[in-house]
Length: 277
Length: 296
Image (cartoon, rainbow over all chains, first blue to last red):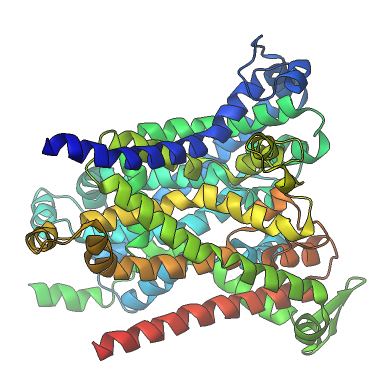
């Protein structure tokens, strides 16, 4: 009896959660069905799945609107900025967690304090600097800007993780003849795989999705990232809903897959950012 | 041995080599720009020349410029999101942590909006909020056809439409946060309450919410920062600030001053004002929280 009553009580909870889930995924459903409709069908059949599935929109998007190139650019920029961030932040976090030097605490707090500084506040002077040193429309230039915005979070998380590694492990490495740099590569980095997974998942999603920085530093048609390419076709081709929605589909899909694959790390990352407080 | 190593390390320059790349990059992307912004904010740039302008950029922004005032008021209106986020995030976190089936599945589906690019989100909602979009279609179906309107095109409603899109996309973060907060609460507290015969609502208001106090504090501060400094892309993709500045926000105003009106001095001044506002806010809430800690 009691268990049946307990179950009945839970029905309203399911109803609320199902409604919220539907609201959460409906836009994605709409994107998917619109992507695979022809333009004619879009105007006669708006919210049901396509009667005739077609790749017309997708093909046009990639052939005539440079989406292939934009996808490639996004992959390069995401990959490059994360590699650079990983190298620079690992070195810095190693020093902050395992070495003693003057002003260590001050420099570390100053670095971590930059977590969350708004892009818009600093971006204009950065743009001026980049144009002076000829790093506009270059993969390296934009990747360095992304790196800078990723660094505080990476250094914060890595430093606290490196600190927790027992000194005994490092001492045994020293006895085996490792120097300071080898200790980092052979002991600390392999032990820190879960943190690295967390950082990579979080920052991949951020860089791939980001618009403002990409829009300012990559302006030539063949250098646009996928989000910038999408933001450009929205205004210009509003008469081609199937094209625009296909663009949204290919911006969103890789990150949804990444999230589903690395769910644990993603949630971990969101929470560890909040723990800073 | 430890002490000899330490004294040797005092002259050890190597640690600085490890942190050097990060420091250089952070100087170029954060510290130098802030100084540059401050410097530029006292100038007017015309015809390739910089003319010293004193505080006139600031005076104009604070006293004269109606677009900036509109933008600031819009940011304030958007602060309505903060209590909405708080209530909804706690509500859904509580529901998900009730021991029901499919919790993992709900959680996964609910997070999806949070990993989708704001640009893609904006693209979809521009469609859904149109005059012939699904929102109006549904309103018509349930007999609320007097509500039908162009949601992003009418000045009085556009800001609330933008608000709804932000809620749709950003709410999952709060839910995740509160789920973690709730699972950190000691279950013995609930056990004790059960013995005292507390009901579901009493549990919520007398145990769960008080126990979540620090998470709530963080979440409120975080969202105020988001509203003032991290929502440019929503407005840029959904409305470009229109109709007639009804959805212009401070970030967009900075962007337009710099790249549409080519007034770098004024853009820098507004960036400085925004920076001071955020910095002041963070400092203030830090002080307030310190005060309450001492009282306890």
